[in-house]
Structure formats: structure tokens, C-alpha cells
Amino acid sequence: MSVKTINVNKDILGVNEALALNLKKTFENNKTFVINLMAAPGAGKTSTILRLIENLSGKFKMGVIEGDIASDVDSRKIQERNVDVVQINTDGACHLDANMITAACSGLGIEGKDLVIIENVGNLVCPAEFNLGENVKMMILSVPEGHDKPLKYPLMFTESQALLINKVDLTPYTDFNMEEFQKTVRAMNPDIKMFPVSAKTGEGFAPLVDWISERVKSVREIEGTSK
Amino acid sequence: MSVKTINVNKDILGVNEALALNLKKTFENNKTFVINLMAAPGAGKTSTILRLIENLSGKFKMGVIEGDIASDVDSRKIQERNVDVVQINTDGACHLDANMITAACSGLGIEGKDLVIIENVGNLVCPAEFNLGENVKMMILSVPEGHDKPLKYPLMFTESQALLINKVDLTPYTDFNMEEFQKTVRAMNPDIKMFPVSAKTGEGFAPLVDWISERVKSVREIEGTSK
Image (cartoon, rainbow over the protein chains, first blue to last red):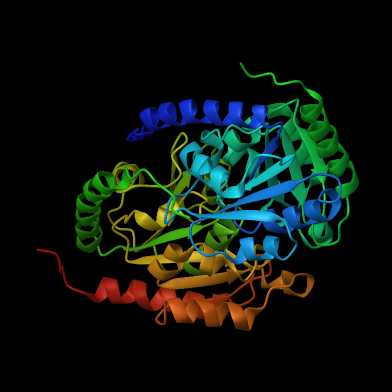
């Protein structure tokens, strides 16, 4: 069956790319490593960030940009950990764009930050299309969502450099097939780095923390690369 | 902090409303009851539909429209149950619109169907904005997603007439607070009908099946209402 769709994305994406390039330069100039964290609602983005703060905020100057359609429940949790945070409420928009991040960066005070984590809007679709000038796109798929998701939401899986498989503590109570899942993902994106974790118990976070730490350090060691 | 957003939705939504009205008339003329089923990825839309087929396909002539960005894994599962199904692949679009449903209806053969379930793209945001001419918007929130979701994705919760709280079998292994969740939802949408269910075990489906059956029957008993 042929299905007609209306394409309005092209121009918006072009404008976004230009802004994202500017952001990338700003991050490089400040030697700030930036993670764009994406996932479906309830996959565990905020609890993952809280775990990363616990493990990384002693080593690095961190900041968080919280993207939500509405509410500031998540940013208040970050604030309690004494980490600088800016809340973006998109008022209906289903993803963050580079324009919003540009505004958020001046609110956050990007200068002097080693590591900034952007929590994107909970959505396994649209956020993958919008670059935010980040160093790394990191996604979360939680075990209860099921191992068939890569085939149904391919762009997120092919765009991401790192994939957290969260809520592994729930694996015994679900039909999730870890081997099949990883095989499917690997076929779509051979270079993606996968980390089975539980943000609830802390399981599996050590290799993830090492992986991020290495990258933060390498960005700090590079002499100003943007021209 | 003020955040600038680009609004491209207004015109698209106007065109969609006109097409949705036409669809609504088509459904009325055919005495077909239509459910628009929406949820985040992995909340259990397809397994809910399979349970509803098990309980309703003996009583009513059913059809299913499957919306996915890519793949036909779900529609093949429906087909195995001998229920007519049409697959829409949106090729990146994060929601179904009335244009796509119009095309799907002729593929499905809407005439003579008592009940059509539309499985929307897995997304807790955008699908809530696009009417599809349906009788009922039904959403699923699964227990592992967490009880804080209504505040973060308000439109879906205020637009829906029925809410399935799925995967209640996982409640003991999560922090999900059912009472707090229902209280929050009720405050946002006092008329919403809530059904705690497990599509995996079948728990809680009897009242949902009754609720749908009543509505299908009442639509069949009405003499042609559209003019």
C-alpha cells in the first residue's frame, strides 16, 4: 500500500544544522564534552543522569539541561544534587532543537563546564533528527520496552554512538532477549557501544562511567581546535 | 528562562481536522466503532490488541490499522489471528494523520467492520495532536514507565477518554505508586476511564472488554446519524 506523507521537515532541519554547528564550536572552545541523552518516556533518562552525577560530579564540573514538554520535576531532582541545571519546557514540541540549546547554554553558564548532559524530550522518534552540537548521541532502551524496538524505531539506533540497556534488574520478569536485541542493533549499527545497566541498582555503571570519563578528558586535553 | 520555539503545526493541524471530519462521517455511515490506540514505544499496544482480538473477534467483525515508522512485525502478528490488517509505514513521521488513515481504510475494507483499532506510532507526544476521526482515543501507560508521566506528557492524558495502565504484573518490582498516579490523572482529566491491566497475563481485561463491547453495540444500533 502506498501512503502519502506531508514533508515539512526539510527546511527546519537545515536551519537546525546551522545552529548546531555554532553550538559545536562553542562547546569546543569551552572544552566541554556534551552528551545528548535520548529515550522513550520512562526509560530512565533522569535516573541515569542522577547515577552519572553520583559517579562523575566529583571528577568533573557538570551541568545538565533538562528538556520536557511541561513540568520541572526532573530539574528539581538534579538541583538537589548541587549540579547546575536549566529546564527547557518545549510547550508541546516533541524534541529539543539547537535554538533551544543555544538559549539554555547562556542560562547554564557553559564556560568552565567539563561535561554537560542534555536530557532530551521522552521520544524515541523525533529527537534523533535534530543535532544539538553534541559530542555523543546516547540513547536508552529499557528492558520492559521489548527487544523488537530497533526494527520499529531505526533512526535512533543508527544515529546513536552509545546505547544503555536499562532496567536489566527487570529482565527475569519480562520476555526480553538480550542476545537477540544486541544482534539486531549490531546489524544496524556495528560501531555502537552497548552498556547493560540498572539505574535503580547501579549495576553496570562502572564501564559506562569509564567510557564517559575518557572522552571528557580527551576533550579537555585538546588545544582549541575550532577556527 | 524564556525559550523560543518554531511553530509549524497550526496549518498542518487545520488540514488534518478537515480530513478527520470526513473520516468520522465514513465511520458513522458504516456504523464502525474506531479506537485510536496511543502509547510510548514498548508500552504494550500490540499485545493489548492481540488480547482484544482474543476477546472480541468472536463477537464483532474487527479490523486493525498498524502504524509504524518502519517494519511490519506487528501486522504479521495480527494477520496470524485471521483479522484484517493494514500496515502503514510512516517512513520517519512520528504520528499517524487523517490522510494516512483515509488511504488505509480503503485498503482495509471498512464496510462491514464493527470495530477498527488503529495502533498509532509509539510516541507519547505527537499522536495526541492529530485526530483520526476516531470514536475514542485510548492510551496506554505501562507501569515501568513510572507514575510521574502525566505531568510531563499532559496532552495525551487530557485528550484520551480511556487509559490502560499496563504491565501491572511488574508493579512489585518497580516504584510505581498506583494511587498517586490515578490521583494525578484524575486531577487533569476527571472523566477518563482507567483500566489497570496486564496484556501479558490477561489480568483486568474483562471490564475493558465490556466497556468496548457496549460502545461498539451502541454505534451499531444508531440509525445513520451523519448528514
